[in-house]
Image (tube, rainbow, N blue to C red; front, side, top):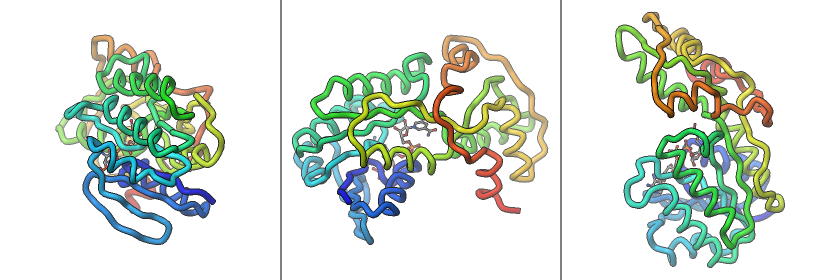
Length: 255
Ligand SMILES: NC(=O)c1ccc[n+]([C@@H]2O[C@H](COP(=O)([O-])OP(=O)(O)OC[C@H]3O[C@@H](n4cnc5c(N)ncnc54)[C@H](OP(=O)(O)O)[C@@H]3O)[C@@H](O)[C@H]2O)c1
C-alpha cells in the first residue's frame, strides 16, 4: 500500500484514477483548485497551483503523483506551465514517480492544446523526477459532449473523421496501475476497442438520446483537420480497453 497524489482528481479521468487506487487499497491525496474534503482513503487538498510551497505540502509523503489536472483554456500560463509547477513541487517533495497522461497524436496534430501537451511531455521527460507517460485516445465523455453540441442544429453536420473512443474508467485503472509500479518512461498507447466514423458515433448518440435529425458527413480543410483525417490521434496497435461507445451510451442513457 502506498500514498499517491492525483492532481485534478475531481475531473473525469482523475476520479477514475482515484477510484482505482482506493479499490486497490492505496491512500490518495487529491489536489483541487476549489474543494477540500476527507473521505475513506481520500484527502482532497485545496491548492493554488501557482503556490509551489502549498503544492509541495500537498505532495509531501506521496510516493507518486498522477498529473490529471489540465488547463485546456491556455489561460494563466496553460498546460505546460501547470506541468512545470507540478513537476517542481513533486521534485521538492521527494516524490519518486510522476505519471503524466497525454493524448495520442499530441505531436502530430497542430491544435494549440495538443502542442501544449507535447511540450509538457518533453518537460516531464527532461525533468528531475522519474516518470511515466501514457497517451490515450478520446474519452467516451468527450465524444458525447461534442456530439451533443453538433446535434443542436436541425441538420447535423459532422466532420468525416474517425475516433477510437475509450473508457476514462479503463484509462484511469491503467494510470493507477502504472503509478504503483516503477517509472516506465513512455508506455504503450491506450485506446478504445473500436475505431468508428464520427458521423456513425453521432448517430449512435442520437439513437441513445431519442433524436432523429439527419446527419451529414462534411469535409473540412487545414492541417488540423488533415491530422485527424489521417488518423494521427488513433492507436490501432496500442493497448485497448474493452468498453465500447455503445456500452457507455447504454449505461449513461438507460431506456
Ligand atoms: N478528455 C479526453 O478525451 C482525453 C483524452 C486523452 C487524454 N486526456 C487527458 O486527460 C487529462 C484529464 O482530462 P479530463 O477530461 O479528465 O479533464 P477534466 O474532466 O476537465 O478534469 C481536469 C481537472 O483539472 C482541473 N483544472 C481545470 N482547469 C485547471 C487549471 N487551469 N489549472 C489547474 N487545474 C485545472 C479541474 O480540477 P479542479 O477544478 O478541482 O481544480 C478538473 O477537474 C488531461 O491531461 C487530458 O489532456 C483527455
